[in-house]
Amino acid sequence: MTTRTHPRGRTTGALRDDYLELIRAFPLRPIRSDREYGAAAAVLDRLAVRPEGTLTTGERDYFETLTLLVADYDEQRVQLKTARLTPVEVLKYLMKESGMKNADIGRLLGNRALPSLILNGHRQLSKTHIRILAEYFKVEPGLFL
Image 1 (tube, rainbow, N blue to C red):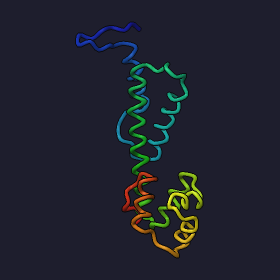
Image 2 (image 1 turned 90 degrees about the horizontal axis):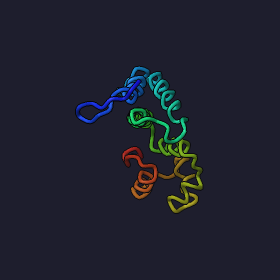
Image 3 (image 1 turned 90 degrees about the vertical axis):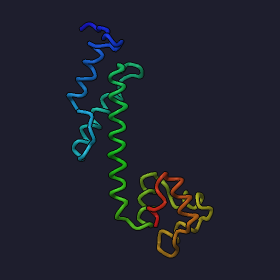
Image 4 (image 1 turned 30 degrees about the vertical axis):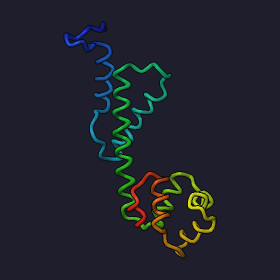
């Protein structure tokens, strides 16, 4: 297929066909289910494994947009999961997701024994601890209240 220039300077043809083919495979719209999430991830995986610099402009635009939609769905799922958790459960969840150990949290909070006390329910998180943890994990401080 040949590529033509649109009267307003945009290209049509092959570039547009690549983009439209991706849209037909998985339309760009909010992801609302785990099934849609899996389909979106499969499309992203297919594009991500291509050698760097080989995606067309349309494919790059599609990839970037679908990445944002997947990230939004991920964020919504994390918020739903953490909304029902106690502050200690939130901390445990964040530690697990980021591969952190008690010693890592101890270094972060400046006290090696503190994580064990907090995680075992013998000590509450202080405002300072909450601020440090929220900043480190890039979450809202209210998750720890």
